Structure formats: C-alpha cells, structure tokens
Image 1: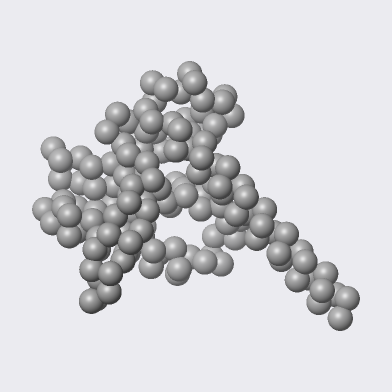
Image 2: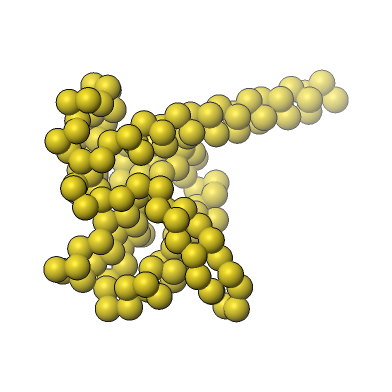
Amino acid sequence: MASNLTELLNEYDAKKYAVDAGSVMHEKLRSVRVLSDFDKVDSELKKCVESCAGLSSFFIEKARTEVPVAGIINGNFISRRIDRLVVDDENKIVRILDYKTDIEKETYREKYIAQLDEYEKLMCQIYPEHKIEKYILWLHDWTLEKL
C-alpha cells in the first residue's frame, strides 16, 4: 500500500508541477507581443524563443495571444481559447500555436491533437478561404511540432 500511496503522491506532484509551470510560462509568453518587445522580456525566455526554429514567426506584430473562439462543431457549442494565433490574409494562412508542458509527449498526444483539430474546425468557420496550420510548442525542451 505504501508504494501505491507513494506513486499516487509522486504522480500528483508531477501533475501539479506541470500545471504550475504551464501557468507561469503561459503568462510569460502572453506578455511577449512582438519581437521588438524582447528587450523587455527576461533573457532566458528570449533565448528559448530565438533558439527554437520557426517559433519567432509567432511573435510578429499581428500575432494575438489567448484568443477566445467559439462555434458549433457536430451540433455542439464549443468555446475555446487559442494560446497564440497568427492570421496571414495575404497568403490565406491561419497559424495556431498551443503550448504544452508535458515531458512525455506521447502521453496525451491524441487529446492534444483532438484539441487542435477543434481549433482548426472553429477557424475554418471564421476563415473558410484560409489554410489552417497547427503547431504544438513543447515547453520542456522548446521544440516546435507542426501537426
């Protein structure tokens, strides 16, 4: 029983750490509006964003953070919040970025893909002529994954 309790407590601690770390990082990333604001950002965050291939394109002038979006999917009302969104009307592309703190990427991968698929369906309703691109930023190792 003790090992089960220990395992449960360790699992709880790991989840709490991930949630807490994710909340802190979301807040830090939300405060970064454009690359020119980087002089106001802590140096470690700046280094992480700049070192991640392709990530800086989400920190341009027209990028938006914590974007609320809602609509009907399969007859159900869905309301979500997109971590970072870039709409490129000239090239007809909508780029969606979601932050994840998991160390084990495969643990919730299907859930995350389903989440981003919902975002895509909602964005298709708003931007029917645009191509939708979906990305996950894995914050534990600062890798950008295109889905």
